[in-house]
Amino acid sequence: MRLVLWIVIIAAGLFLLDRLLRWMERRGWIYYRIRRGSAGTALGPVMDVFHPTREYTVVEQQRQRVVRAESQNGEDERPGVRETTDVDDDPQLPPAKL
Image (cartoon, rainbow, N blue to C red):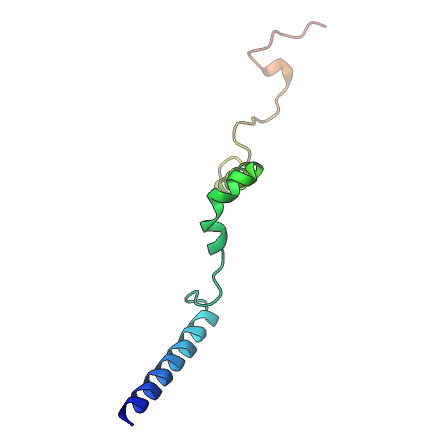
């Protein structure tokens, strides 16, 4: 009888713990049953072997995130691209002959 009581208490405790963790997940505090992005993170290197273009896509997405973050900080949106100027003002080009 005592063993059955302990099993019931443990089962009730696990049930309450599960409910608590689900509530915390709904609030966005933890990932409990729904793991967002964990499979992609774990299988990333394996996917790179079979889909090499994925690596270039990931690199480009990271570059765009950096550019977007820098543009929000007030830096140039397109690094390495200078503003268009008049051809006559460019010191590297010879003056235009008319």
